[in-house]
Image 1 (cartoon, helix red, strand yellow):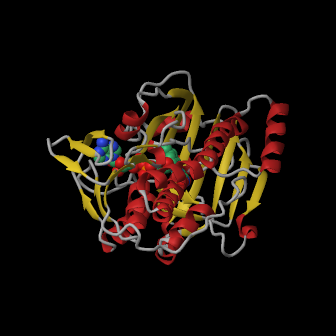
Image 2: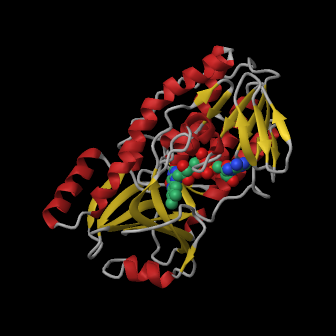
Image 3: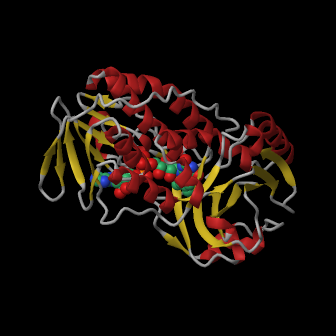
Length: 388
Ligand code: FAD
């Protein structure tokens, strides 16, 4: 992926060295399901505890760059992924006024074995959940974890009053992770002074298989097609002084989105005219957790390192974590040594990517013309990656 050097994974062939080890994962998102599958493929006995009543995802798209596809390939899921996904041919950056092209990154130039896919989030989750179940993972719904006691025989306490013991507990419980707090204490995030809208619309502008970013002062808007190209996924980001909550599910009036981007030209007005429902949320920045494991408890994905959506790498990092965690436990043959090797192998790369995603927003948003031109040049040199 441009701007993100693909990790040189060893992708070691799974052995059955985790045979019989009892593992509990909290959270059936991308990271939890991928970890469940990778660990079950190595012989572990895995249950995933999910707080929701169904395994589902918000109606939105996700970009899976070549580094994420490499993990899905190693898990045996690439051909199924290709069936429902669109292979993106380019990432295009455009100026907001009339939509003039600033930069086009040719993704085909990465090579035939480095595909960049545009996928509906629900399709990715379904794929991971069915593969995990087929590998013997038990996914248990309506099981909200309230606390975890680390140690050599860690315990999870559930909101329904039950307790569960395991040889290893993995917190894949997202941005508000209970397990992260047990390992690290409370670490308050801070508001980035940016909010984001998310919407799906019919592909009224006939956008081809590419991600487009329209960049303007204090705002940008990203679009890409999904599911055969009939639908467009839109994420629009605006700088704003204040915000209270973090979360994806607050509905907003589509006219607020149209008003925020009223100065944008090119195809943006037509695209936004098609918006009927929209969600709005605040973007918060969290520190990367200093502690990823203690005793026989670990965290991965957003639980360890929530990532702003300016590089389309959050879920892909969760996939990488899941693979490396399984591989290092397999290699070490001992839980604590495996967990230490997992953090040592992941931490540097994750910090680089979280930092790069933090830095991308200003490049899309500059107000002052000459600075904007310089930022656009920097994007050309650095090779931007499309935001989420
Ligand atoms: P989550 O997906 O948050 O899953 C956590 C799961 O744990 C959930 O199912 C939740 O219900 C469950 N859970 C939480 N607490 C508990 C509990 N106490 N007990 C039981 N279950 C619990 N990333 C990309 O790679 N590409 C993109 O294009 C991209 N676009 C994005 C666009 C936007 C607008 C945003 C906001 C993010 C985007 N991301 C993208 C980031 C990506 O969505 C996240 O990084 C990713 O979902 C993290 O996966 P996860 O499995 O760690 O956590």
